Length: 440
Image 1 (tube, one colour):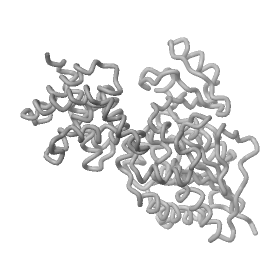
Image 2 (cartoon, one colour):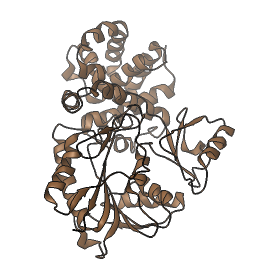
Image 3 (cartoon, helix red, strand yellow):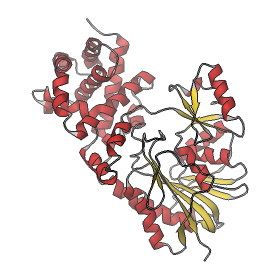
Image 4 (cartoon, one colour):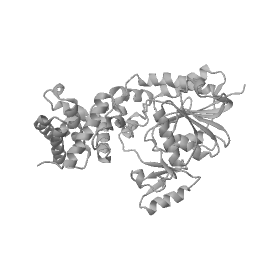
């Protein structure tokens, strides 16, 4: 008995995405382009779920293959998609096997249908025994690369097991309410009137967590910019930067513009410049600000070359949300598990140090710089900031503003504060450090 055409097409499109990430090093977004059906939410959900558990599923499947090296990357990706559906989806195993067999034709390997059928039926029968053995390994059980598990255990020995579990959870959908236009309680009632349940996050006064994720097209207030989608941890940035109306503010690595919009909502009246390196990324900032009905000066430039964009007037506040390994947002971007390599954090740290040094040259005496990452690796966080403090005689650590909330479970570091993914606050992983240029 065959599967529905839509199920086979979903499996085929998801397999192409998984292959693009696992074998060609593409992000999910890059791998999704030009793939039929890939824009559908079903395809994306299947692909993301497969990538989330890829490093647990693939070793089990390879145990069932006589010659794993002879299996094409696309067929291997299809088998992994089907195995994910068998283990983690509510669909009957028989339906998933049939969909995968039918999908062999759609991915261009119809002669592999008997192999796919035989391997997947064995997987259905033997998966409990396979995982009983393979799950003795912490990296396999949690579907993380060995090096990343060791990195987390070294940096966070007590918290690492919970972090690994949190990385495999489905992240909550959190809204940021523009309180200059809508009170949070009023937005919650507006959502409830549409049958959308939410809860207020007590320590983040702009945040509402939805009971279930949904398309932004269904959200009242989204199209006109009264609400945006943003993790509660990211919503801390404007509070910690503590800008004042009338000040010159630089959002130094601004794309795609989530924090840019949050800064303008939090402190109307600032003179904000939003800068990013690539023109297509600056276009995304412009699109976000257009939806929010906010304005900023948009600049395409390399922060490390101030002569290309700076008018010589210092900034009172700078948000430096640097490019990083993104190891704090794996639950939202499971492809990170397959894309990152052991040396990436060190490479990012070198770039981050350069960006921080350059940003400090633009900061006014007495001004505040907020250094931020979505990494949980100390070498990208307190070690970068610590090196800057040692090298810059006019730089000091600034205390967080007295009115700034302290999310539950936030970890004080030698410099700054670390939010861990899935900890008591339920946020993604973020690092923040406030720095000040002294007038001495």
